[in-house]
Length: 329
Ligand code: COA
Image (cartoon, rainbow, N blue to C red; front, side, top):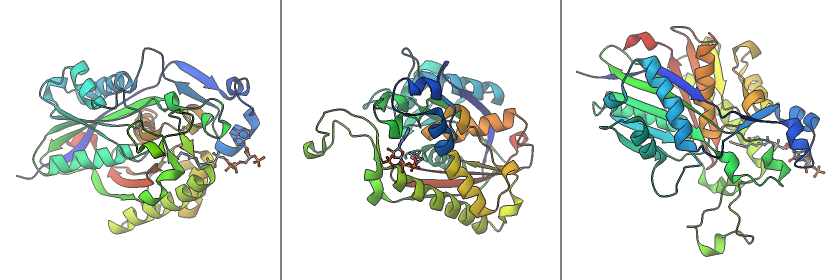
């Protein structure tokens, strides 16, 4: 008997503290007008002092389990996609597993830049299709602002914190996941990274600070081209047309990147989901938070064709086509 994965639950968590562009004007030499016209971001959330990737993942994960009507004890696996784990040694997924009481679940993290959630989701579907597991919690959770150099105006205006989660469950009939693709170009690692204390000593930053470093223009060019190409490819390979898509959920990095990608694909504005204005770039949490909000706002209905696409550090990229059918399981 073959098993098929389907998303049956979704949830999100955004920290309470809001940092507006006006707040940033008081911290660094920038302006609301510059940030808005160059990125489309108005405000972002900042992780609380008593919060972390695992605590936010727990909140989002609990909500997703409630929607799926699934108890934590039924989970076989927890995957957390993150760039900002609580600890370098210990998967944040293990902390989530303990906190929610998922006693029989295996747990691991996925590190694939802002594409990490789609990588993790694709992995979950494989575990179900192989027959290994039936109930999987997939989370994207980020506290990237902890890496931010608040004197670097090129990066501090862009990122925000939060978490999104989905439950993927096995059923005997069909899957909602029509196709996915993932890619990597490690030659561009230096365009967007955070140094690690475990790197070659010659690679350590002179000032000893482990801040996020980014070549904004390089990333921008890569983002537009890659999101458009990955979207075209994933739709073509499954024999569909871009015009068949009901909702396009691109990685919420920058409104200009989103609009350029959508334009190149010929996807009209009303079919593009956008929340970058409220949250900034949530890294690996961006796709699940956007997916969750789109469902909650009624932007996705049963049987809709949804295209998720993301790019990020690595460079990495990933795209996934879903035929939304939570009722299957
Ligand atoms: N406020 C005011 N001025 C700023 C600024 C800020 N926050 N950040 C940069 N500037 C200045 C620069 O210093 C530069 O000034 P100069 O011309 O006097 O040297 C000028 O604005 C233009 O800088 P540039 O880097 O060319 O701007 P840009 O149009 O490329 O926008 C980003 C910068 C970062 C918004 C844009 O490159 C971007 O979004 N890149 C992708 C980033 C991304 O998505 N990262 C995450 C990937 S998952």
